[in-house]
Length: 293
Image (cartoon, rainbow, N blue to C red; front, top):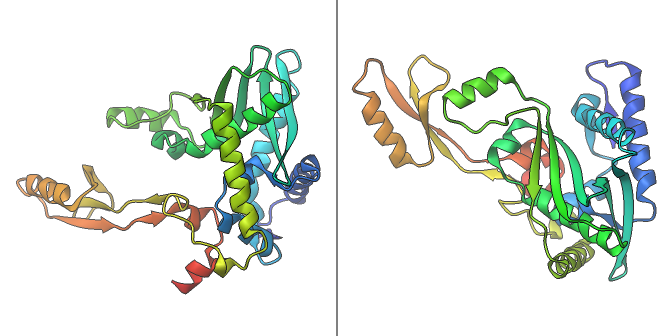
């Protein structure tokens, strides 16, 4: 991976990122696949493996990696009396070594994973990938003879704002109460988790080293695809009217009819679906399916 520094950040940022990446790679050992990689789509994982020398990221894009590493380190240094922290565990599955690292296991069996994330994640309430990753981790802990009674994500919401919270509540919107949110995660049975691990290992083994154009395209779900919406707009304003973003065109027309009774000119603006992972968290310029488009 090529790391650039287009905003001329101090060298300490580059050194911190290198230390972060080196520490992560060192903790993995001879792992074939980690829990984080296990839940990724095969195309995404292989793109990062095969195109590593072509991927360009700016240090500014990795700031939250550094931030997350700092948070983990501070919390790790202050958990000695409450349980075990940052413990990496391994298991063999059909010839591959799978690993996962837990952030904290309390003495009463609460397994926590710390996530630095954005408000949107909490607002959407879509924790399926968190659930998959944490249950894989839980399985490895149990295989190592450790007791796990409960799973939770501790989300550290980097863009939380008390002002935005107040406005969101006035509009009846979901917004986290605080910049740190504890999210309970359902615990799977050992049988379900073992089957999930075997299926994901088999899937990734099938595509290991396969040319990207021969790997199935990510599904809409894997692309974190948001549906199209329809916004009722007032001429001269940049944002939709209050309550004017609709899921269907029929709803938007109904809202438009209501607004036309008031003063001003109104119209409907279509907001097309967006593939969030592709646009913001991957490298579409290297993806065979995106280059075609």
